[in-house]
Image (cartoon, rainbow, N blue to C red; front, side):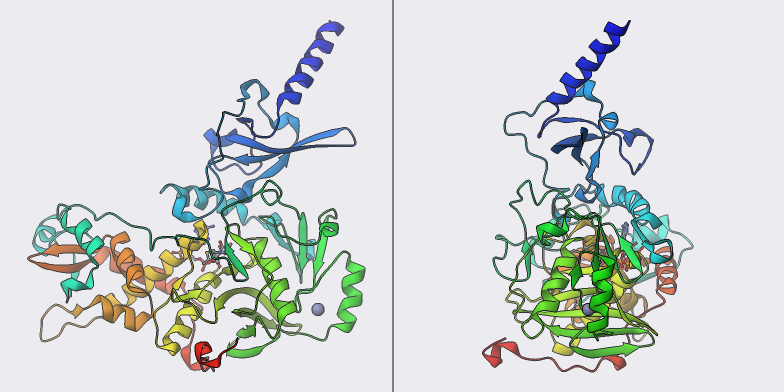
Length: 489
Ligand code: ACO
Ligand code: ZN
């Protein structure tokens, strides 16, 4: 009997010895998206043994990397161990862009993110811590429903690729939904953060346990190149105003006696109620900008951090209370973008996520583009959450215009895609992909038309009623600079 127990122990030990990097096996997830996936397949990325305690760093194959975690052996189903196959690589989709994601990912993420925004992820310090048919055919199927049909004025509004995909479809079919725009051919090699493709094992493993920023303790999602000595301590303290990082509360208190900042550096270019935006020049405020990038990298997976912040402007959104202007989120923007990107990276800090601040940041970025008299688009690839947020913003912004179009001389309202672009500063490709995603474009009697069902109008109106905080252009005090003419950033 004792021998048997010993044998089992040896057996288990031998099996655990075989669990090495690259192996796959079912692992019990700490955040459970749903019943069947309690033990999803995971890949071993690393193992460590400290004071006789063995732990494995796992990546859940079909899930975003932010769920990667260290687990104890009892959460491994070792009997189902799969050894690495030759040339087996973890699929990139969950590692990087939404562009590589399966269409099911946002749903899955939806469930996951609900769990992700649970209080323990980012708790306040108090605890310390349209429908694709012709108007006629639709009249039949949607009898009794009020509809709005809008004619797209120019056929040439649609670039050839989209025309082909539309024309080759049966008019009853939903047009194929393309990605908003193709990812760049090459990752950018300059900039504060560029698209990352070649990840090594070190940067695939989260290196920071917890950060304390103002009244929040936050669990990082991804690797960020903070100094190695900070990666061995359980909490890294970050000054919420200058973003300097220190290793203890004492150090932070000492720092706060010297640090006079109560708001981000740079110019406050927008204020309405408690929301402000500060514009920070990556060249003039290098330290702050670098610290901001380091902080952002903790929640951005598909970007590599660069220390050259000179070519960027940072727009930091804050919320005011008597203690100061607290950072909520930010976006960065290239001073000169050859691709007309109006956002390089965008982030809402986890404690503020899913409250509409992301859309507020996006709305602000398009407001700047309107002031510049340009259309813009976010830098690709987008993350899964980035794509969800942009899709939602684009849909609401475009629908808002369509819903409010007034009939002219009793005729159906007309608008061109170019006019939508001019009104919103959303780039043409993004307008088209949104209309297609919403399944609103139809080809009818030689014209593209948009049909809005009463149902989609109602859904839209309900969603807009929920959008309580909005950007008020009157509160923006800003003149765009022509960086190309300036000769230097
Ligand atoms: N699951 C499902 N839907 C989500 C989630 C989620 N976890 N997060 C946001 N959304 C949806 C919201 O439901 C909302 O749509 P709806 O109003 O139609 O329901 C929309 O996205 C925007 O929600 P907000 O509350 O305005 O956005 P939030 O403040 O959460 O910020 C952001 C969105 C900035 C993408 C945030 O999730 C974030 O910082 N993520 C980490 C960094 C990142 O991925 N940034 C984008 C990278 S791409 C780039 O930088 C160009
Ligand atoms: Zn400080």
